[in-house]
Length: 304
Length: 277
Image: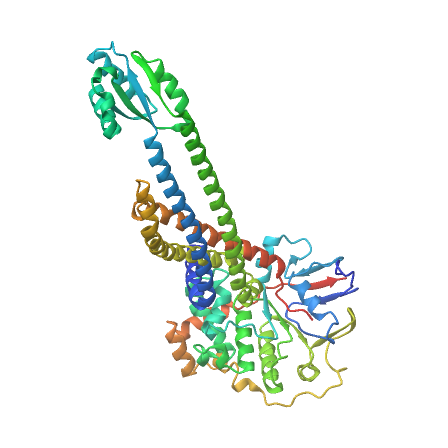
């Protein structure tokens, strides 16, 4: 295809959007609806992930240090723990602090601890694990470290959280994939109506000897442009919808000790996703519909 | 033969049309005229027999060759098939644009064609502002846009009154006199009688008759005055100030560029043969 022709056909794509503005608007509305459904699904996934992050960060492993270990040995253990690849955070909890917390946790009944000293408790490290899938292996490796007398952990909760995260991820991917194909189907049908509406132009193009690539190009440009318009408009609408939803969803997450994901932190990721989905659906929707149309209505001449 | 219904649309057809001929194809509805046109435009492939047009073997043609073959044809439809959202100039230019012609060539060629069909003063009009005859003239200019050596006209006068019909066929006659082959399907026997060219009659899918002129047609010829003073006058009369003005609006010097445009229109020598069963 020559450069001049490409320029003309691209301009045709723009012109067609304006000439067929009602159907273009219908396509944009359908595309935006699909993008917002996909976007909402993704934002729900991001928020569920944030909640899981929060819960995971609270699922810590307590590593108790041998009474016979001196300060140097205790610090060495701390360095060893920090160096572990699956450890996110290590916090030293001296026995005095632990004893004080015990007294506070007993409240009015703290009397039962009277006469006892902090020496009854060991020093400890509070360890946060990165990847819960590796939880059991990490705990086993910590257990064999020098001067570790005991490790308190909740592997059951860890495995449940890991399963939930996996399930949420797979379900989200599945839903987004299904919505993608549903959107493609709806948009290609909407575009099919615009193609049917312009069957005269197509028949003229075929009659004067336009190649299929020439016939397809303006429709593809149109589909891509409609996809991009929809992505920009959809992003704005998604932001509005999310801002409203954030007001009550934020309250629920605050109760859990977390906070709602900030839309602006993900604005480029969401725009990229919208633009990709919009452009792919717009372009493929056009091509699928046009190919189907060209197969079904290849006639240049009317019947007798 | 249509495979799905096992219907024979055309049978034992043997037609040879020489380069530069003007042929009327007549017949009642359902006789097979449109099927013949479909075969000639390579929309359909015959179940047996062969078709050769403009040096192309239509039976063994690859799909990607079809557009290039169609560029050697100019097709005119009964319903004009003009794009209502485009003006007259753009409707004609459209045929050139969709095959990748350069804007410079389009700016030269389209005013020339509009002059040829007597519509240069309507270049900026929309099709719905034109009469049926004028719309068909635009369609004819479009069919000529890509230097077709053969015009296939599928009942081009079917939607217009007799006077306009006469003008359209008179214009086709002009084009034919330059060497372009014309194949016109029509029901209007008065026109056939008036212009007195070769007549092929199709009935029930077979050739009923093939005469070199219309002397056997029992219909009265039209007696309108020659529209030559109106149609084609811009082409014939280079002194037309209206035409010069229009050409200048497209940045063309009529005294120089018209000659070039005329040369572009020289038909390619080719033999058209349709031999379908």
